[in-house]
Amino acid sequence: MKQSQLYFSTLREAPADAEVVSHQLMLRAGLIKQLAAGIYSYMPLGLRVLKRIEQVIREEMDLAGAQEILMPVMQPAELWKESGRYDVYGPELIRLADRQQREFALGPTHEEVITSIVRQDINSYRKLPVTLYQIQTKFRDERRPRFGLLRTREFVMKDAYSFDTDWEGLDTTYHRMYEAYNRIFTRLGLNYRAVEADAGAIGGEGGTHEFIALADIGEDTIAHCDQCQYAANIERASAKVNPSDFVEVIAHSQTRFNDAPLEKLYTPGMSTIEQLVQNLSVDAKQIIKTMLFIVDGQPVAVVVRGDYEVNELKVKNYLRALTINLANDHEVAAHISSVTGYVGPIGLTVPVLVDYSVLELTDGILGANEQDYHYKHVNVRRDLDVTHVSDFRNVVEGDTCPRCEAGRLQFNRGIELGHIFKLGTKYSESMSATFLDKAGKSQHFVMGCYGIGISRILSALIEQQVEGDGIVWPTIISPYQLHIIPISYADENQRELAERMATPLEQAGINVLIDDRDERAGVKFKDADLIGIPYRIIVGKDAASGKVEWIDRINNTKDLLDASAVVERISTIYSGSKTI
Image (cartoon, rainbow, N blue to C red; front, side, top):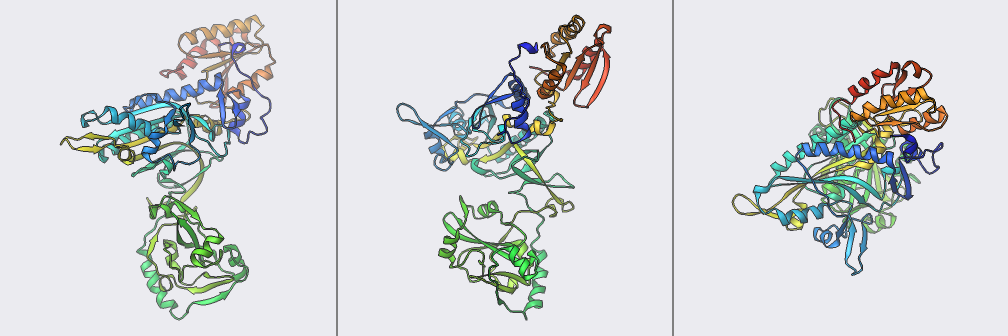
């Protein structure tokens, strides 16, 4: 390909509204162009990278036994109402009506559609298991599109759906997809972690894992062990907890502090943990923090140690609730006759959920449910009605790993690239999707779903592969395999040598980009850095003697080669790889 014929344009400076490196470089390299907030066009170079990523995904999905289909973007609202998600999915679901005023939605995901398809075609266990996937554009009306392709309203996604006869079959399929995802992200050269996660709006009854690319700009926080492979989203992560360890502590504390009764303490203006620590000269670990939440419309108090934060998802899951919100000042007063900042569990008639960590406290401080007052000398087991005890807090760095119990938890920011779910019968039951088992009895399909945000991968790769002021693509997805740059294409020796190298490579299936433009060398090199092709040949003053400069941007090396050696070297690098 002659670069003079390539439809692309580069920018010397990044647009002011491009907040992160990947967004800046994609715009500067001419990979994408913004049409509206969160809506982008893929230009030739960007699309070539996207298609190569899709090819890797297709190869691994096919290898895992999945079959590709393509489903409609427009989905009848009736299907979403049938599954029960139409009214609860939220404002991210883009809704519309046709000229007959029939309601539709632009698909953010396709559980309803695929369930509708399979229930029409599969009526016997003999046709199971089956896994179907597609690569398609999705739509979500994000409140605040940002970070380029990381949070958009229109994006490219691979979504797959499996149908099994039972949970054992789903476990097998899920593991196969889990391994396929690991192969995909490894082949793409990503630094990633597979982490335990929450099912969120997709729902389901079984396990779920997210695949997170480590990056400082990531919107997700993951906790991972420094000794083993344990990793989980911060919402799901737990630390080592052994409730029996507290029995002796509690028993000892009752003896030790029976002679120190509760005492009301005047704490004017001390409504925060920080204010209590500063004014009372105590450690935050000694303070018992109580927060009131409205869970499915009902008040629930949650008690954690002062140096910890309540994990709302854990509370929600413990109560098997649909919604949870922190109570406002009015709700605190109305439901428990207390004051925000001075809430305490003593005397409450609403359910009180106590985090394990609080059980250790034998001389604590907690709110007295009265403006400007707290209690001190609190012995939790003696003074609180401890009925609901579980893990209700966010982990912190340094917590003991719950799996190996030898390592410590560390935090990293990351970008979610993929998510796999065990849906169970969530959709097959609500949509009456059944098959006949071996005994001729009707059973609901046991389902799984498996998504990858393909367009997000571009951003994640750039965030991890940026070098100086440019991109360095992994070889497997580079838009071209070799970039040949004659310093002066008008020079007959340089032009002839560049084309002599390119011809046999292209015949061998290696895609070559030749910069034949009448530009200064500095402009060519700057554009080459932005485009990101990992291997580069500079054809300059030594062209007459058949010498060229080989630049390996992945390993950051340079060599002076005979032009005749270029074909063998680049062919060796790409030996056995598929190109587009």
